[in-house]
Image 1 (cartoon, rainbow, N blue to C red):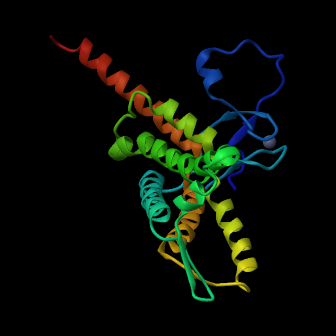
Image 2 (cartoon, rainbow, N blue to C red):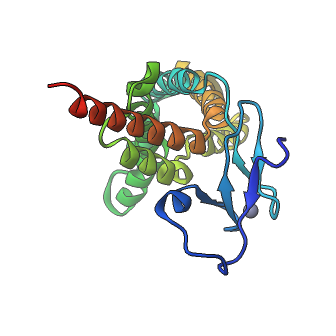
Length: 237
Ligand SMILES: [Zn+2]
């Protein structure tokens, strides 16, 4: 942990702050303690001195790693949804189901809202979150400025994180498999392994992704573009 990389901000008794000073303030997402941010080097971490939450944890080559992991997760998600998930056989009967079948299994009558919720929580929201992260970061590769709607996209991706429940679905499947194993022969299909890979890649992705670093990069590059445009406008006609 880097000592002294972040200073706790005192109470509201000081002189009023200007906009630049206000923008340099960050609140701990867990306990709302207010800090004035200073640069944190890759592999260093800034933690909240009150509750211990990690505030900033930049990683080396973070952008290319996040983009690679998000793209991998999206491809695995496609495979997990459309390929056969499980093969069940018992006393001569044979059944094969995909994740899409599981989602559509409740799509009739009173259970329709459950079907919609399952589809949203395990497929639509995780895929949307990954797509938003790619939209935010991929155009910024190579030091380019972000797309115009990148801040909104990244904020939405952060808001969707608690609703992205692909890994919870896999835990449910594991519990169900233990119960069914005694009654039928269960053979995991390619989608099952794709889903396992997806969970591992998602954990790695969330570990590499440091929101503070990404916000900082978006602000720095927009400021740099603005400065370049201003310099070009002031230059010789
Ligand atoms: Zn805290």
